[in-house]
Length: 384
Image (tube, rainbow, N blue to C red; front, side, top):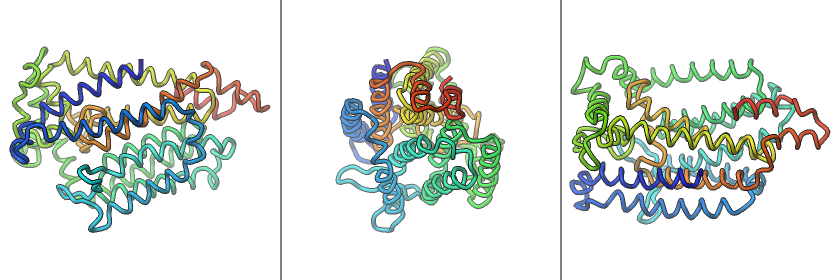
């Protein structure tokens, strides 16, 4: 079921990328297929990674998690080095791989989830400790999120923090530590807004886009116009008008608005239901995971997809300020697509080696520990 849902979203994404980008492809590269062909190449890479990872036992990831984390940090540092990282639209997020270019931050999401899941599954009673649990967690996530913010990429940093904090909570972190993390996050967010004018502009656009419809509010209003123009049934596949240079980034961050314009409310809700069902099936995998590492790994992957989808749709519908984060599987972005498909392969591996809905408790009981420990309760609470 998970494989079928992901492949359906992948095909829909390729169609949306073509529909929303062919005009830009003709204008910038004299090739209507420029963007969809590149997305298709990354899709092949991602599907190959997914099929390979789902065939192997996910437990090997525990041993290589420090190496994956090291490679991810090296990639995040390298992208900031002039001459190595590529700058586009004022952000330095890409590294060139021959004819393709990718964002190390996308693969850093997966590497961090694997590393944190392995680290937390081995902490057990230490996760509630300030010195042995809270401080190392904050330093670990802070370094990765800080490097991503230097690119700058606030949306990706937010997804990283939200996903890893969720894992920390599920693994049994104390409410005091969670309250401290919320406080740190709030102060950091305020500091980021005050130190970068473009972040402050997004808050202004969120609160009063109508006050400056041709300036700061242009992006927000055009997204809403596109989303609302589809009505109930939509204008028809390929018939979007806002994609003709009204919506900035119509094939990346704004693809859901194009989807709403072409397929209408029915199509938009249908796609959201596909995501909801994928998340539901993902948490079924969490409940059936054979050990705590598998449960945390699956939880991290599903939360990554859920948070990213919610933030993207929230920004487009003006429920939250825009963060410039792509829609999973649907937006143009090759490295993002490949990383997501690789993550799905790991999720399918956890599902393949599942032993039943109460495997975490059985594992803990078999090792002589109480099946009602904080971590076991946390895994159950987060999975439900």
